[in-house]
Length: 121
Image 1 (tube, one colour):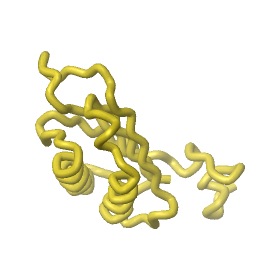
Image 2 (spheres, rainbow, N blue to C red):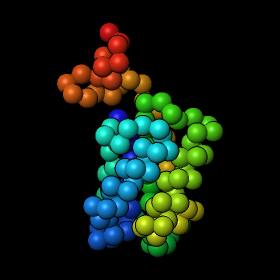
Image 3 (cartoon, helix red, strand yellow):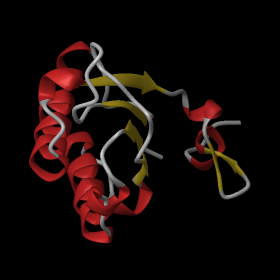
Image 4 (cartoon, one colour):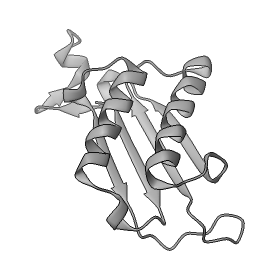
């Protein structure tokens, strides 16, 4: 159920299968969630400017059921921004990350919702 979505002007050629796999592990680790539930999607090669500059930049959204909050998001931001800077060359000061703490009833999976999967009605 955790999903990291990244929109960036970095070329698609930098977004390898290995990058996606490694990013999945970063998300799973920082959120303490199983890899098997984590999703990473990247829209690359987008026309994008930050402060009028087209140097590498991005906007990300991390959605999760739980494990998000004021202090936790600082840890997640550090893990994600360091990873993206190292692998895609997006400087930490040219990346915004939006955090969405979804309710189990608001996330569908396997024909139902996580609310139902984990014992809700």
